[in-house]
Structures are given as C-alpha cells and as structure tokens.
Length: 207
Image 1 (cartoon, one colour):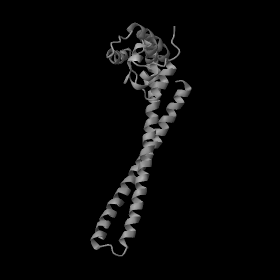
Image 2 (cartoon, one colour):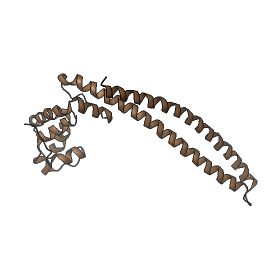
Image 3 (cartoon, one colour):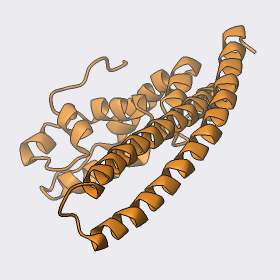
Image 4 (spheres, one colour):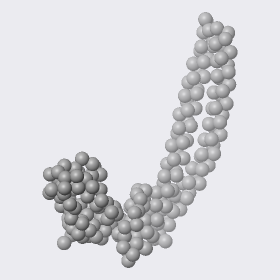
C-alpha cells in the first residue's frame, strides 16, 4: 500500500527537522508515513535516527520496520528520471538513495538538470555582478558631485579641499576599475548566454 498523504503528525517533523517534537506527537507517530515522506524527498533511510533520538527522550521507540517500508515506497516516487532532472535543476543534493536498478537512469537525468542549474546560476551571478558594479559607479558619481559642491562652498578649509582632491582621485580610479570589470563581465555574459542556449537546445532535442 502506497501512502498518499502526510498525517498532521508528520508535517511538523518534516518542516522543523525533528526539533521540538512533543511526547504526544511521538506517541501517535505514523512511522510508515514519515518514512514515505523522507523517501519521496530523497532523504536517506538513516534520517530515522533523528526521530529516534527525539522520541527516545520520552521513552518512545521508533518503528523501524514501518519506517523502512514507507521509505522504500517513497523512493519509488523519487527515483524517477523526471524527478531527477528537477532535483538537479534546482540544485538539490542527491544522497545516493536510489536502488542500483534505477540509479543509473536517475543520475543521468539528475546530472542533466544539474548542468542546467550550473549554467543558469553562472549567468545569474554574472548579471548580478554587472548590476552591482553599475550601482557602485552610480554611488561614486553621486559622491563626486557632492565633493564638487563642497569644494566650491565658502568656508571649506584648504585642508578639507586637499582631502577631497585625494578622495576624488581614488573614486575616479575605482570608477575606471569598475568599468573595466563590467566590460569583461559583459563578454563573459555573452559566452554564458551562448552556452546556456546551446544546452537548452540540446535538452529540447533530447540529445
């Protein structure tokens, strides 16, 4: 029998990582359902040790056989190529839980999704860095404008003006460095976009 739903007891365990389990929850634990949920989410069967430790504080013994049975059923829903691809694409870790008979196909799909995740993540990181550099350049421009105003403001001391001149030189140098970085990043972005597009086309072609 495949468990189709999570009991109200299993939900807080899964969400809270077994922290703060009450004695009442331990006493009414549906070990088969918890095993199913862990298996369906790719968690290793050793995860039961967390529940055993938490409930052991109340003298409650985990039903290992029921948990393992549910876990095996959960793996049937997890260890599928379509699920494997989505797990890889979202950057989820694979814990080596799939049986030998299904693991090869699982890993092939998982690695395809992981490669897509890697390419998408790389492109996103480049774009974030470009945006960050532009923001810093804008801040530098505003600071240089403020310095310019302060330089011609009556009452600004000669010492302060000298300090502002030095700061302006440093800011100008930094602005130029950022511009050079942006040029390099934009080239990297083009390459990254091409790699991502080519890989997406490969996936669409089923190669």
